[in-house]
Image 1 (cartoon, one colour):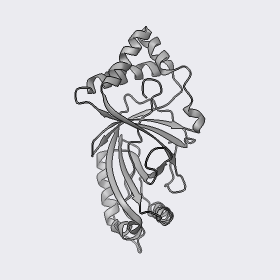
Image 2 (spheres, rainbow, N blue to C red; image 1 turned 90 degrees about the horizontal axis):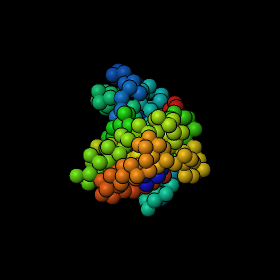
Image 3 (spheres, one colour; image 1 turned 90 degrees about the vertical axis):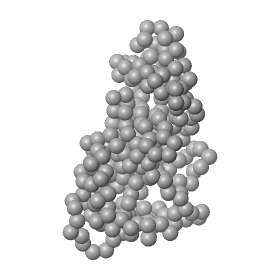
Image 4 (cartoon, rainbow, N blue to C red; image 1 turned 180 degrees about the vertical axis):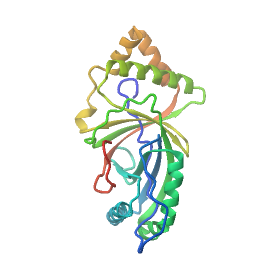
Length: 261
């Protein structure tokens, strides 16, 4: 868990509204991206036995978005551990709320309903969420080589948020001062149960090895004693009602082009 090896949450998912459309549109220009901390996330479960045609539809959809000049970048992921491996996460991040509005307009004007009519026949279930990245307390290191993303999803106790946030702030101060080489990002999901997510990017499964130096040793150095570090992480643990962990595989073959992430 977070006390020994922080991992934040991809939070959830990604989104993609429209599908293949014919003809030209005199529509609004596609909104630009990469200026904010809001992500749009879709989770989609294909029908049993329909994963392959669903992926084919996703590839066509990604190509359509690129050809029509959409400013958003959509990244697609699949779980590789956990109880449910039968869904796809579709995510576009680093937006402002006005950009989310503008992209919904762009999708509508370019025929968003076409996706439902085409790929929708392969779909069993869909969920949609937003998430916000805590940019003040995340410890992200840019790389184009991330292949896996370990995601912790934490449900907080109503009375536990202050302790959790205090622990996160102290950890952030410690890892930044130590230039700790193990990145993570902190996310808050919007919709459904809501959650605090910690996501750790990995270039390979070898990155799952215990970090050296450990988070606890870095925190103890920052706070002055091992006891202070343990107390801080106990505050984090005591504020958690329940947690779950999943590893996601990035699927560049289904995604629209991205840079640095």
